Length: 496
Image (tube, rainbow, N blue to C red; front, side):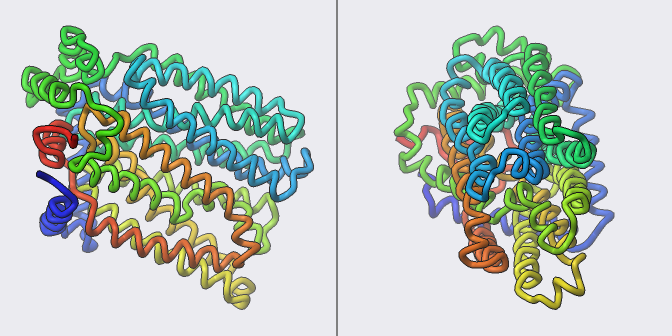
């Protein structure tokens, strides 16, 4: 019976297995390039056009999340003047989206099972479109806060369903990279937002244009999801096995290694094992350790302070003496780094493994946070090495982009048993958004209470604790089907 001890033992075995990918971790660029080339080769052999299209369209949900996360960082500099928003109002404008996202994550598990992953995302895109227009037309802080809450409901729903949908249509050999399309879309959305902020900063009503353009990806998600199929696992779950077979045959068309009958059998057996699963089963003795891993990843991803960098990057850079325009301009470098290193993660996750990138990335971001804290603690550095803050932000975001950024969303789409997957992912996603709300809503206040450097030192300590948690508790999942992962981590029956 797998329990917390068994999972720790598996993690140690995973650590030993990582010796096989040691060349990738010890400065062997050629090996990393080989791994990237290997992933591309696997995509060509096992992922047809339908899978790629479905993954890209589903990942637009991540683009919504990323765009709104990034755009508010630049828009806030102008909103606070136009709407006379004080520090408290600014924190609410930023963080109320996260309250909405908690609500969206809470209801998305029910919706994904009840009306399907596909239709949940269609509705999410429609809500986002309406809310984005409302934000652009807002004439007061309360009105803007209200529409940003509605945006959050959409973002919270989409951020949960995107990795779930992709994981259920992707072949096991390239699932890690395809699910991480969602993270790539998040980082691309952030970069697009930074570019939009830079392009519109000089126009009258600039922040309204910045927020209103978000309606375009919302419409793209709603329309695009109408053109892709339901997932085979959801179809089988609701008793539509003939439809599940037809969809799976289309998804695996052209893949010589595909075994549609075997995959359908695994799905059927997994559904039978999980029939009648209830929310209380999430806390059964077999599933509880996996829930703790999901919650640990969710909290760590936010408590290392990533979204303070995203939301407040221009504010942080302006505190180094840069003008608002220069701060927004330099933030674009942070966005480009985020996208580039997310692409690196997409190419390496299925070759190097989830754990290796998670551990390496956590070390990198923790060191960057420590140096950033030192920078703000030493006035001499601020006067003579203003570039150091930008370098720290870039290294931090690069380390996050190859580790915690994609691995959290990927792992929660893989480790939970099928009958509880949507519920468990909903809980993990809701926890992630709640942690995001706490961090985003407290950053400016923490700066006033314990100084800017004190805040970054707190994030550094959390980074160290997170690394230890990942080292001893997070298993490796690459190269196995969702059903194989379920059997290994949970056993033949769920944790009742």
